[in-house]
Length: 288
Image (cartoon, rainbow, N blue to C red):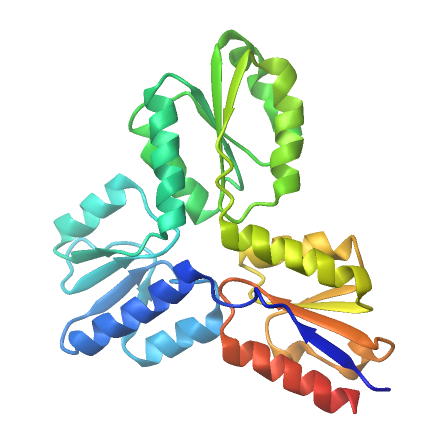
């Protein structure tokens, strides 16, 4: 059976990820003698982390008491305390927080400073959300992280007594999650200010993938299971057509796509081009 394979135009590295990966490689090339550490995985992709490790760019998960060289803050951002701790330990700090994430942090700070009760729509355990929260918390403590409308029940009394509520969103969140939270929030508040801070790349990627899914027998989503934007893509597409979420071509077998003639492929913002190409090649070979 001949397979018709379509790759989404908006797939693979987004601007923020591309900038982060290129910059750390450049840092290493320009400072071959220096230790270069990234605090937390630079991006959610084990292949890229292994490649950086082989180049001598090491991932650390906490800041040591004493260190030397360069400490990179990844695209998800970090708390002000983290920046300070890295400097105190003796590191030269390079901030690679994605510009779109910086905008959310700044908007969150602004809302708290202006007396709004701040709602951050996103996953509490996600590093980007933790950094947004930590940055805003310097200026006030009327802040809640909400990922499901049901979570508003525990703060409903407080919201009703607070005149103004401000909302920001994790950059990789689904628009449907934001809408669900806003629907539940509206009856509880007198005034709501909403900053839709879902990054343009995420919206474009999701909208294009939804369109492709309408006519596809199978959608293949390529990217790390730890990547928020990739798992959101898979969640959205599963509701439209048969969808598989794989990290790379090793997870592909003929069984997955034996009855599919029209196959569309999309990939998360931290998925390298070569991994996407390997998936396409394997589908072509197995399809024949």
